[in-house]
Amino acid sequence: MADSTPKTPAASPPKGGAPPAWGGPAPAVGSRLLVADDNKVNRLLLGRSLELLGHRVASAENGRIALEMLKREAFDLLLLDMEMPEMTGFEVLEHMAADGALRGLPVIVTSSLEGVAHVARCIELGADDYLPKPVNPVLLKARINSSLEKKRLRDQQAALVRRFATSEVAQDLQQSGFALGGKRLTATVMFSDIRGFTSLVEQQTPEETIELLNTWYTLMFDAISGRGGVVNQMIGDGLMALFGAPLPLADGPGSAVAAALDMIELVELFNAERTAAGKAALRIGIGIATGEVVAGYTGTQARATYTCIGDTVNLAARMEAHTKLAAQPILIDQATCDGLGGSVQVIALGPVAFKGKALEVPVHAVLLPA
Amino acid sequence: MNAPVIDPATFAELQDTAGADFVGELVATFFEEAPQMIGELRAAQAAGAAEAFRRAAHSIKSNSNTFGAMQLGEMARKLELGGLVSDAGPVDALQAEYERVAAALKALING
Image (cartoon, rainbow over all chains, first blue to last red; front, side, top):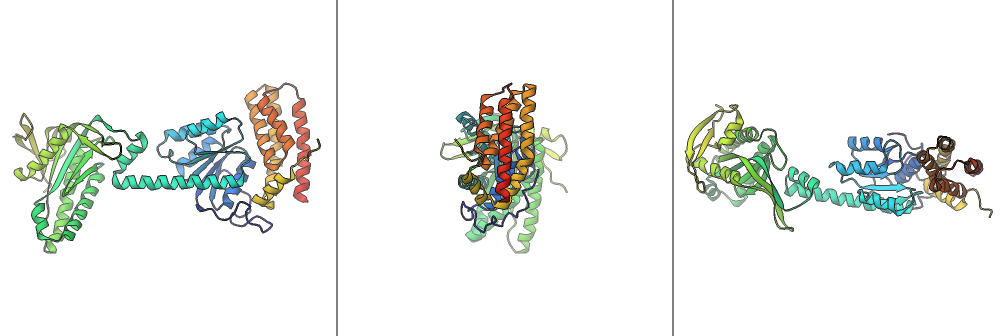
């Protein structure tokens, strides 16, 4: 904090016994606000007004300090003066617009700059609102509540997006916005499913099946995200995961194979539990391929999903299907094998003719650690 | 026209909303800051620094309006929007008005 508001405690009403003239408690009390203003009188008065509205307030005496504080601590709202030394409010808005983590933070500009051009520029740069100085307390309360409400809705929306999309997709959406269409990139694609799922389903109640699937997904998600991968589809008893999309990953093949080994290990642990309870053990197959994919949002403007398509995706699916025939839990293609650089034990199974492939494709099995 | 140095309604509203004790401290802060801002105004004028001149005038305007020092606020506003002047007259006049404002604010705080 650059300075503290004068001694009067925040919660006590002003002397004279009367409650603040602008009314009772705000609905969004207890938010953490940052006031950036180089003028001490303005800073103290605004801080006081906000504290009387029930908020916690920190202050910064110029734009640079404000930006540092925003990066370091979590705030719900910024009240920003425009004319400040070292870094103006305009520059703060520009920095915030370029920073994914700060872009969602609501900003109310408080300024005594005259002319609509200034106001327009602030709004264009992403400010939510503009309050002329001296700030009218009634307007202040209304604008603060409206901005905090907007932030609450945005946060809620972001949380919802995270639940139905991966955090990587959510981040990509936040940074680049939504647009149908794909881009070409190199990624490692993984398919996995539960072997003999149909007969498993027949042996148990639907409730048990749902519980089994949820446990299985939880374990697989842990293994995959633990290695930097992203589960982008869940299909019944199977899943598709991406390593290197939507966000780049340093070592796609190595990460995918490491995740596959973790998955097998977790399923073995889970099986120990299941067999102890007299239930059938789970078997899974994993197929991995590396190469160019087209990744992006497919669907319609109203409903779309992040997906990857291309030969690499098909090949990974074929590899996974082939695990049954090969009696090997993890199969990988040549490009993935080349990407491993000998760090994992692999045996070549020779070329296999896959449906839809003109040429036979070399297949390698990853050996499980003894 | 014989307007009061401090607009009573503005000042009363400030005390109402922020608390009389707090306004006392705010005025004390203004007494510390204002002479510096006037000093900056003079320094900018001497150096021919138009932007610094405008900014100093802007700050004085902003604080004057907060306390209801309408005349002082208007003088500062004219300097802010009018740009750098070489004539010391308007700044002298502003300083004189500030002295009146300071006296009036002192009386209001202690009264």
